[in-house]
Image 1 (cartoon, rainbow, N blue to C red):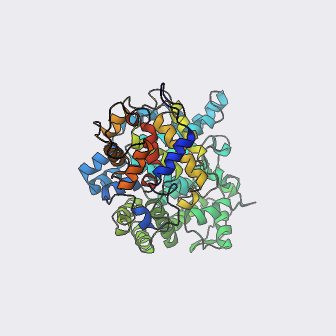
Image 2: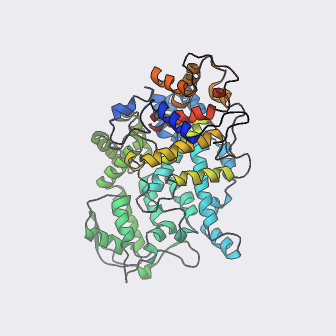
Image 3: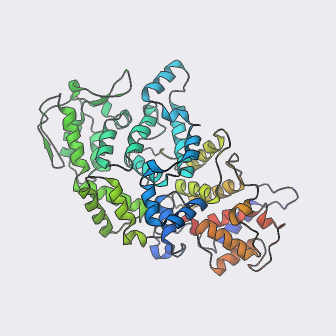
Length: 515
């Protein structure tokens, strides 16, 4: 890394060595997946409001902390569960820099034919850039978390060549409108969208040669989970024939001529399926049945608990949430209310580890940096940085969506890559286009603290919502060759050109990695 003029050059070895000293703070990186919740819980303050922010958003910001302190958890959650009522002008204005995500399927195809659009790749990449932007700067945080949850549950890889004309429309007309609605409606919208029908090959499935890909994933991944039979898959595949894509327009259509008729039985659902004309109606009845199946309720309740509570969630909570899901006919908001209000949720602080995507987004939110003043180069750079860590939003290739457990993301190489990314972001090396305060110390801690220990305490309160134990505070002060009680002067490098190194060291610790 390059020192500022007149300063001593700081080598990568020294920074990594400091990380090791600071992780006298903890251990070498995030706590391993096998660590008990009681171990990781010690890193977090016993604070119900901060706990909710860490789980229901992409990470606390100074503004969101102030808001939840003012409203309280119940009113804050009510507000987030009604995203249409949340004004979000800054993020809305930012999204106008990605105009292609608003295009319909027909508009994308028309522009490609006219030669003004690069075969849809620009559209799909803008969707990834927009997802990153929304995660960092949107006020509708719980909506964005749930959009990501359903994008993984009903995964259609982005970017991918086969959905070049439809993936942005899938996000805009299927996932986002239904993210806080009824799963039954979301499932039916997904099943009749060209992106899903293309991704899982149902557009090519006919009565002459039923394709089982979508039928199998519909059961295993989207609804009832493991426990189906091969007969279930075959009958689901037969019933789904006819749900296809119009080759001329790229839009969804039902084709009676290719629908396979005859009785079907799928996971307790029975239908005569007597006529080709009634095939689509029969499919919708199957989807309603599957969406409200007790096994689907348990499957979705489990995945929500894994996302918001723990990698191995308590069966008591899963069972209660499944019951709420069924009682409310697959409505998700009552399930989320029950989840966030549960004693199991309140007791789960520190039981989750941030994934790479969550980590990088939370880093930008924690330090409060703004997007590019103009253009999108910085946002694009951050998207590719996240991609280098293995988790660019929407980009998981298999149909099961990104894994949401610590074991998938806590390799030593992955942790080191995150450490490097923390310093790049905080120091403004990458993305260099983001808006950073001229006085970083003032922006993060306010008035100049009197000592090194007080500086570290102020940063810890900003980044973690708590102060650090004495031995960890001392370890960080020692990085500068100081003690916690050493007087801090305005000219000291710790509040100048070396402050990003201190912030990055703190972000490298489990105090930030756990949530």
